[in-house]
Image (cartoon, rainbow, N blue to C red):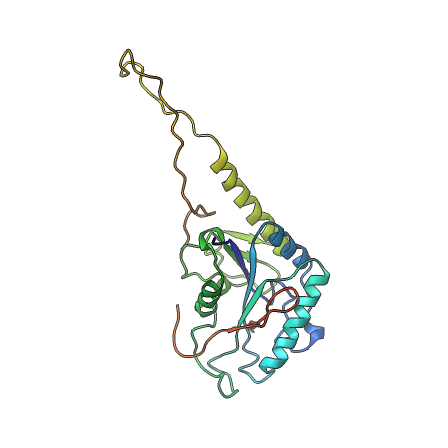
Length: 254
């Protein structure tokens, strides 16, 4: 059965925004990130990180070193509450200098290559899922059918926020809002439908009492009801799953 998921950015959302962090010392969880991830797990969400990591294409770090940084990140998030279930990263950049990575690819956000791979490998109900990030590209503006898009203010300075359904100070408030929105939708679904109105003058004198029909509901409701791909070579990379979840990377855009 499809499960709801929360797709999260890395830098500026889960960990502090640093300019191309390439050492464990630069991997610092955002306050409340571990606890927010733990709450999502308790609520039944698959937690998937999608991140651009052009530091690889720029020659600042290789994929093995990046993997070790993600192991470190998973450990640090777990210590402060919880971690993620899967991580996908794009190591490419059209202005890179590393052989095999300097290219225009289909996986670098906002293109949907990483998201497509995650959806192919996880049975996700996109209409009951959301995107959380510190940039509009983290919200995949061209992808339709997602439950909600949420921006956080712990990373890049926000520009146009019109694509977002909610702007939160941190991931803590983002998760608060999302879980509350989903709870309200569930409450409305459980509420009994009012009986249909009938005009007494139109009813035949010996008509049987009307039966209350339950109002049909959308099978896949979302915060928006409905919400609003890619190019060239290069493929997203799925990180091997660490102690608490897989890992992969994204790039802090400078």
